[in-house]
Amino acid sequence: MKIRNVLFGLITVALSAASGFLTTTDAQIAVQGETVYTVSGEAIQNGIVLINNGVIEEVGSEDEVDIPSDYERHEAAVVTPGLIDARTVVGLAGYYNQDHDQDQLETSNAVQPELRAIDAFNAREFLVNYLMEEGITTIHTGHAPGAVISGQTMIAKTSGETVEESLVDSTTTIAVTFGPSIDNNYDSPGTRAKAVAVLRQNLIEAREYADKRAAGKDQSRNLKMEALADLLDGKIRALVSAHRAHDIMTALRIQREFDFPMILEGASEAYVVLDEIKEADIPVVIHPLMTRPSGERKNVDMETPAKMKEAGIPFAFQSGYESYVPKTRVARFEAAIAAANELGFESALHALTLGAAEILGIDDRVGSIEEGKDADIVLYDGDPFEYVTHIEGVIINGEIVYDGE
Image (cartoon, rainbow, N blue to C red; front, side):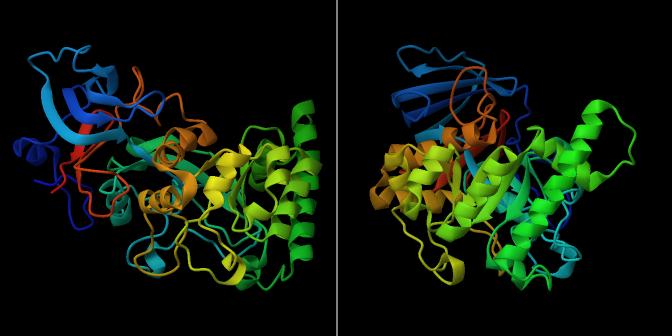
C-alpha cells in the first residue's frame, strides 16, 4: 500500500498501520545498500544504516555493523541521504493552477516582506507528495520571485499532515527580485532603476527602525519594518533572484551597501561574473538546468554548476517556480543534467544533499548519512541520476513514507 499525503480524503494512521507498511518514528530499521553514499565521507560498498527513534544510529559496512534481530530490514542497490530542493514554491503553489491554490505571489503590493510562508503552506498539497516520491525529503519553499520583496520562505520535510508536523525552519529567507520579471506583475516599479530605488528606500527605513529597536525607543510596531530590520541585523537572509549578469552585479552592490546576509538564486548568467560572486562569498541556488532559455534566462548554460565548482562557489539545485501545469520540476533531474555536463556524479549528489543543507543552515540535521542526524534516506534500484531508475523507498525522520509502488 502506498503511503502518501492525499489530496482527496485522508488515510488514517490506523488504516496505514493495518497495511503493515507505515513505520512510526520510534521504529528500528536497518537499510542495506550495495552502495551507500554517505556524502560526508567515502561511499560504502555493502553498507548498512541503522535507524532508531527517528535518527541515524550507526553507519558502516556489513563487516562493521551488526543488524539486531528485531530491526526491520530494507535492501536496495543504492542508498543516499534524502535529497534537498533548495528553492521551490511547492506547498504555496498548488497542482490545480487555480486561484484558490496559488499563494506564491501576492500582487497587491511590490514590497511585502511581512508575508509568512508558514501562513500559506499546505502540507497536504499533492505536489509536496509528488516531490517526496522523487526522493526529495526537504524543501526550501515560500514566496516566489517576481516582486521587489515578495515575502518569506521556510524549510519543511515532505511528510506530515500539517505545517507544524512538516516544519524545519519557519523563517529562512526574505525573497527579493532584481530584473524585468517585476514589471510583469506590477505597474510600479516598472524599470530596474525604479525597483532598486524602492528596495533601497525600504532598507534605509528599516535601518532606522532597527536602530530605534536596538536602543529601546518607543515606536509603532510595523511588521514590514520588523522583517527588514531582522534582515539588516543578520537574523534572516535575503534570497535574491537575479538572472542577467548586470542584475547579479546590482544585487551584489546592494548587498555590500547594506551588509545583509544573502543567497543568490537563479543566476542564469553567473558564469559571466564568477569572480565577483566568489569575492562576495555568496552561495548560489542555481536555476533549473532544463529551464526554457528565453527572456532573462536566454543565456543559460548547463555547465554553470561545473564552472561554479571549479571557482569554489557553493551551490545547490532547485525546482524553482513554474507558472504552468504541472507546476514543479524535480531537483533530482536538474542535478542529473549537471552531472552529465562536466560536474560529475559525486559533486552533483553533494550539491543536492549536504551542499544544499550547508547553504540553508540545516546541515546539523540533514544532508548526509551520519550518526545522530535525521533519518532521511532514499533507496534506489540503480543510479539516482538515471531517468529509468526507480525509487524503492523513502524514509523521513525514521518513518517509511513511500515504498516505491
